[in-house]
Length: 83
Image 1 (cartoon, rainbow, N blue to C red):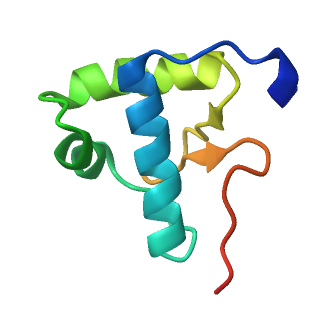
Image 2 (cartoon, rainbow, N blue to C red):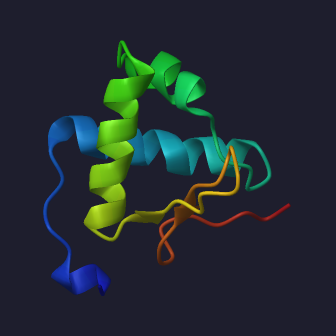
C-alpha cells in the first residue's frame, strides 16, 4: 500500500508508530521490544501493544517478521539511520 493510500491512524497508533521510528533512529536501526514500546507510550499491557502493532501492520505502516523478537520494519521512508 503506498503512503498516499494509507488510512489515518488513531492517536494511540500514531503515538506507537512515532515511538518505533524514534527508537530506531536512536538505536542504530534496531527495533524496540513490546515492553519498551509499552514503557515509552504508556500502554499498560504487552497484549494490547501486540494488537496495536497488528493494526499498524494491517494498515501497511510496519512489517513484523515472525522469526525475530525485535522484528519491526517501518514501511517507506518515514525514518532513516545515518550511523
